[in-house]
Length: 88
Image 1 (tube, rainbow, N blue to C red):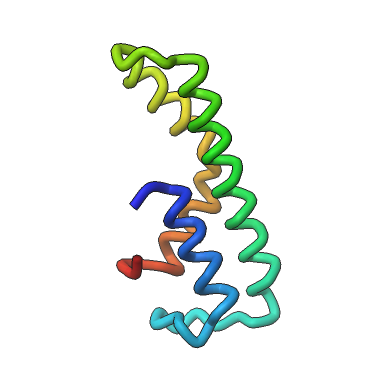
Image 2: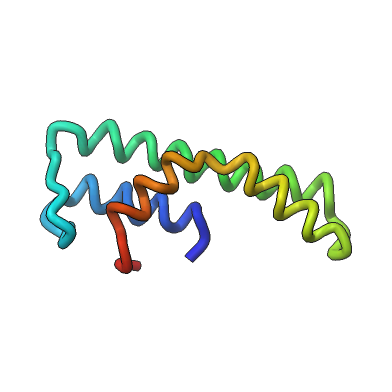
């Protein structure tokens, strides 16, 4: 699962807390948290697209991947992983 998928999966779970099996059920924060995770997923997708246009050559894959990793909002990704754990 790529980071954008993880963020979106966590956003879905926060919007649908009855599907959360990890014990996290903070309905008062669910909408704001879901919006933040969706924003981070959109930003990650934009970074991937931007990197592909700057480093289109397959030989530049390592540099492209490293740049995208530096752009990824790690706190949002950490929250997404904590929410989703092993859930797809």
